[in-house]
Length: 66
Ligand SMILES: [Zn+2]
Image (tube, rainbow, N blue to C red; front, side, top):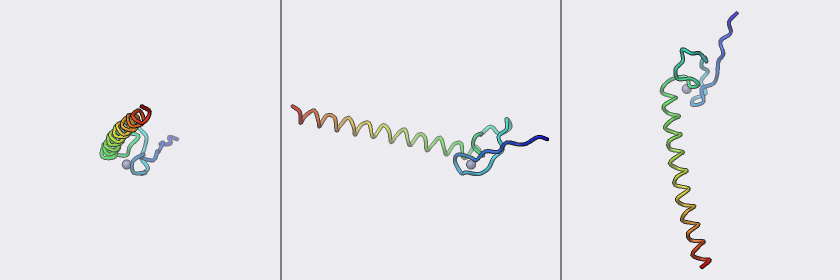
């Protein structure tokens, strides 16, 4: 008896079959895969903005110490 392993798509939560035929795994579809990539890219963008802010704060702290 063959049991198909199903996983929940990380993007939309839809149950999808984990198989070699599913090129989008662990996502249910290429659409979810791309959406997750865009979200990841946006997150990277946010992180770099935070770093700029931290740099600014550090500079400000340095000025106060002088
Ligand atoms: Zn999905």
